[in-house]
Length: 84
Image (cartoon, rainbow, N blue to C red):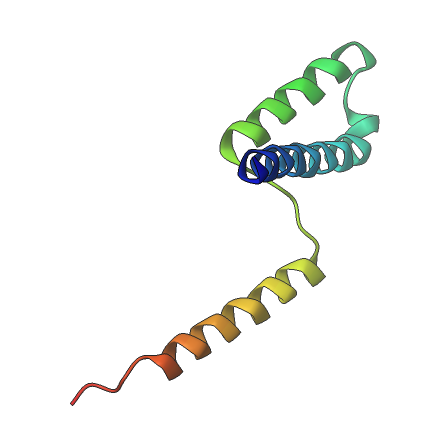
């Protein structure tokens, strides 16, 4: 049961990340989108982001990910025996 709940929470987190990304873009483009097209533009961005798994991240989030990735690679290198 906890696996199903965790999966539901993951989906909700993914949808919230997409929504936040779309909200940010729509805010930035607000003055460039005609009022009559605003909802359609928002809907299409949301659909595209969700379909392709796109999220906007900050520079700090990218640096945190790169540091984590580097740590993971370093740990793999230490765990792998050298070739003889």
